[in-house]
Amino acid sequence: MIYYSLLLLQQSAMPELNGLVTTLIGGLSLLGIFLGVMFFVMALVWLILPFGVFGIKRRLDNIAQWQQAIYEELKGIRQTLADRDQSP
Image (cartoon, rainbow, N blue to C red):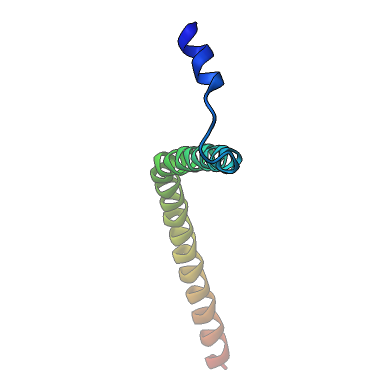
């Protein structure tokens, strides 16, 4: 208790720096919180990313199969129309 009282009695060598240091420390803590939140969000996205990639890959494979089926059907229609135009 006596030590704390003595600290209160001491005069700062540069009192104008007290506000500046407090501002800097406060700013750094806000920056630290912001960077911590951003790191957490990026880590969360990084963990979820593989599930999204594999989900999209499955959908793209299905779309490629549908496209192949449509291509085959169009090829058959084109052949039918070409045969119809050639027959008298």
